[in-house]
Amino acid sequence: MRTPAGKECRHYYEDYYRGRNVQECRLMKQNPASLHWHPSDCAKCVVPEILNANASPDLELTVTAKNKFFGFGRTVEVTAACAGEPIPLEQAYTGCGDGRLNKGLDIFKQALEMDDDD
Image (cartoon, rainbow, N blue to C red; front, side):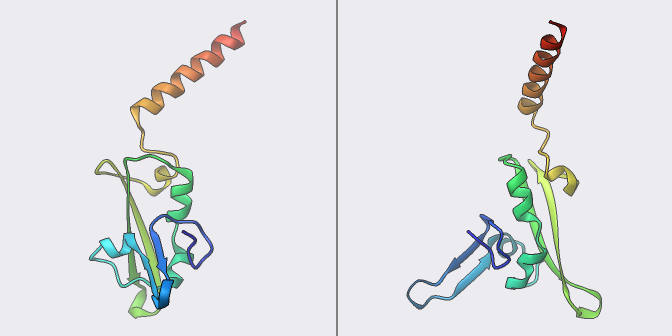
């Protein structure tokens, strides 16, 4: 679904059917340590970019909204984990290190090297 920031995110939900007025980020809703979600948080969130770049089913994202210094402003922190093991956020864009994927890339690399030898 398209967020208020104009990005496509599967964790954002809105419902305006028959007078309802529901907007929520389901990742923040699952995190009890996060502040209540605001539509402006979507502009600061990197989850849509990560989901667009990485389709791994083992990727687990946690989003936390926190107040900045003395409560002025808000920040959105995203942490990533692969099958329960924390990974750096930069690696969340490229994948979880799935052994099957690496094996497929190795086979592709060997095929390219064989093609260069001919």
